[in-house]
Length: 429
Image 1: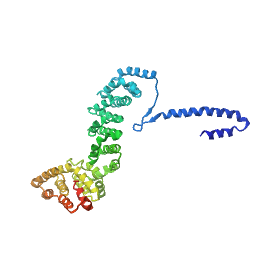
Image 2: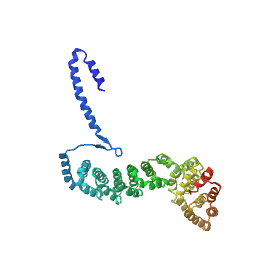
Image 3: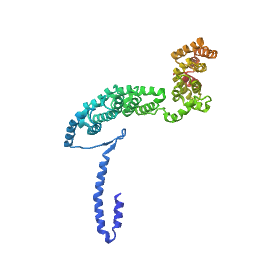
Image 4: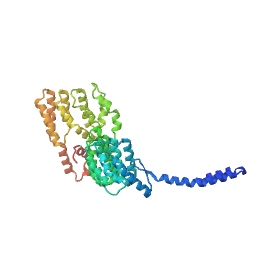
């Protein structure tokens, strides 16, 4: 890059009138360029952390500067109290964190500040960050143990920031605690625990069974982003992709309109079909208002969508939609006691048309349906409930069909695709 510049300057100073100026410029160029290279090397000494986005400075400090930091840390320690002015306290926390191992004497007081019930969210965030930055520069596990102990704290922001910062240590010691935090009652804590496991990566293999279980059933709609974080953690730990697709953002945009359609006297048929196509993601939205008094049209249309959802026959989607309907089992069961006979009748139809693999669930449904056949004043409700009871009491055909397949086929390969599909839909391996 320097040679073209020099050639241009030589051309510029070719005439006699500019020779002296040209030599001055060339001399300046040769002095400035090496300094520019050195400045570039200094810039490359700063690098960006790929996980946090923080710019971390690689620096060499002399003994005098180190002594100054250690002495300043001792001055700061008495001020690490909730009563200290917030602006001053935030400045102190930033300094201590940037000093790393030189500020390790402040660890016990930083811990107390972080766990104090008198500190707000901002102070907890900054104090936990300072602890983490110091802990990354020292050899012992003092800070790691502080975060592990904080996993069980009664303050949600303590658990949140303990989970967030523990992922930076790349230690298997924090993994058991993070696995427990996956089931925390606070959504934010669960997300941070999953992000920490993703940061730790392959070392967190103990979390694989729990993460796979999270993706096995969708659960309530507000957990969609948490499950996306679980899928990401699983991919980071195993190094393999998952079949999880985060459809929450896309579907939530039109979910409100589709759910409102359930309450209409003459609902849009395409809207009902679109809602059924969403599968298990839509179930919590559909059943959300089943417990409300009245809302007859909503409940009837919702049951219709659930039945359509389970009746999908498009290959693997059939199994997925049946799982979704199982997620609505308890909500529909309560509708057997709804004051409106039309709702009770449709709820009974739901159980009449569905195969229930779980023996316990089948017995629970039978108890509710038998109560209708004995006590319900509506004749049509009794009729449908009786048909559902007979269906649930009837022996399952899938089990016999599975035995026949084994007797007829010497290997699983000889079984037809339709037979294999029937076995999969039965819910058994």
